[in-house]
Amino acid sequence: MALYVPAGARRKRLVLVGVLALLAGLLIGYVVGRATSPGLEDAVAGVQDVALDATAALRRIPIEYEQAVAGEGGESTETITEAIDRAEQLLDDAYAEAIWLADDAHEATDPAFDELRQLVEDEVPPAEFDAAIETLVAEVATTFAVEP
Image (tube, rainbow, N blue to C red; front, top):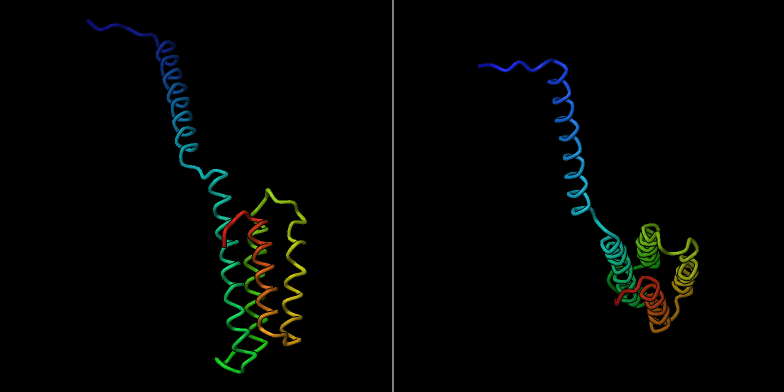
């Protein structure tokens, strides 16, 4: 024996099932999204990696500088300045991504890059140049809480 279900009741059930399915989908999507989205720790680690790349780039420069001063290895003041520019760009990228730092946080390191360029131009002894690099590396390490 067949039961007659009025069209209005069928429509109500269909709408109810649709609303429940929509709510279940939204809930599942929210839970999966929260579980897989990168968090603050991931963002901080990414910025710290970029800052470490900048310190590594800075620490390579004294070797190139020493070769340039000695006239070896094909290094010149131009290649040293380009290396400084690359390191500064890496650090600028780290500052741009570090939204938790103050907007003027880069002012602690920007003058050091100008000083490095001046030291290259003045052709100071390698030990003096190396000391300036290490001072800058220490400042970056402090700012980004990394151990170079």
